[in-house]
Length: 289
Image (tube, rainbow, N blue to C red):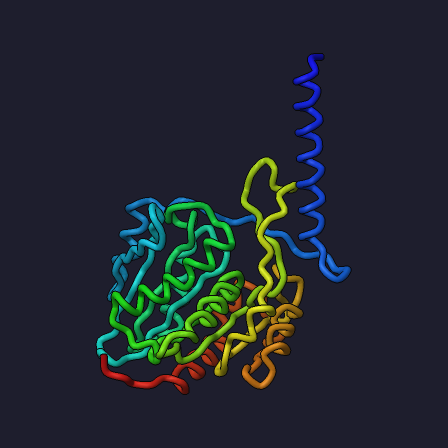
């Protein structure tokens, strides 16, 4: 075997070892094992996208968040110019826009609210590849551009995040506090607090992945915040992540724990939907554009 080939094999072995060590380090914190999830990216055909946009009152909306990066989204404008808006940061879902739109329709019910959801990088045929630093920058861009394009006063905007979208909602909501006007409220549904997300590949087990830690960013989040968590959250292995977020927020948050409710089930749970609807309505301010 040639010397160069031997060196190449050694280098690859060292790289694999370093990746495995990094993955192991990201998989543990303070003695407990972090849960690892693959990014469930996928494609959305043009026909499927248009079918979603054809729902009554909805339209397709696309945002350019970085050079060469365009995010697909769905927006439903309200009838009243001063109506509240709800921006939803969806969870890790291969059908992100479909599930997000359905949740928003259930949440709004008969309310005249503006509604918006956008697929993250790599999801539902949005451009790019999901990486946490990019996702967090995009989260703020989504909020800023939605308010600019739709001429929404931030005081009429209510931010809702689910699962990994809870982390991104926290980041966007916290960053928005630096603006002269700030969003009205933040709701976190089964939000992740401490997990690892990994891009799907042959090397996924060796990939250190992206660590979604939410609590370090909660200091920048003011009241009012609603945290809703189900006790049967199978994805996050129970309610502890939601409890940890609520504890860190302290008096800034209202915490609702629903016995026997699972992760995805939270998006269609009548009690959860009613509480979020009530929370948004109680903090809605009618401000003319």
